[in-house]
Amino acid sequence: MVRVKLYGSARALAAREELALELPSVLPLQELLQRIAPEGRPLPPGIASAILINGRNCAFREGLATPIVDGDLIEVLPIVTGG
Image 1 (tube, rainbow, N blue to C red):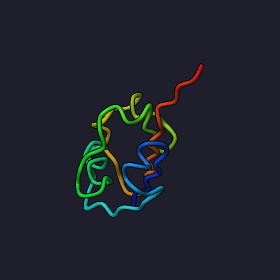
Image 2: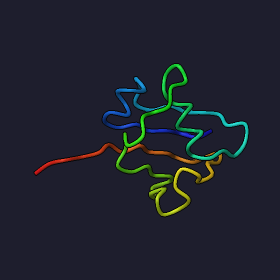
Image 3: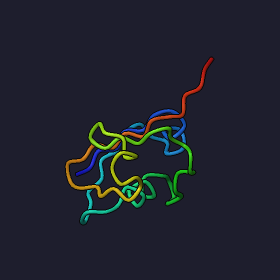
């Protein structure tokens, strides 16, 4: 089982804060993200400033092609601005 935590606008679009998904096998992060939005709509590009996999930014791994496996924790962090 993979746990997904959503924050900010990703939470609002997916209409939930957290979910758990059973994966049939290893799949890329991009495919996982397509499964979490309601009605099968993918989350819009640029909705997150960072996506963490087990606490590590996916940008420092294989980006959206990073393989997701059973037991992973995915956190979709919002874009934050301020001044």
